[in-house]
Length: 100
Image (tube, rainbow, N blue to C red):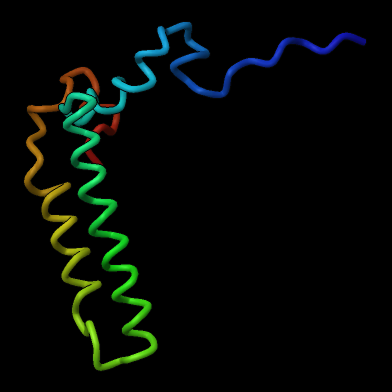
């Protein structure tokens, strides 16, 4: 029995979109270019790693970094959700959960 060819599990490829959409489709849903999204994601990731290390150290030394984790979470939430303008997103994607 022959097996059917494997279909891509990556949505952009399975729909026949050019590969470039792999790098631009999500940033477009949040109203950013690829490089703007790269910068934002890098900033967020770096802050999250730093807060994670602070939380691990806080677990060992409870007197250190007492509020660092919670302050970082609040700051990142404020930056990502509250300050982002819904108008920056691609209008056709707002109702599809581009902003959660």
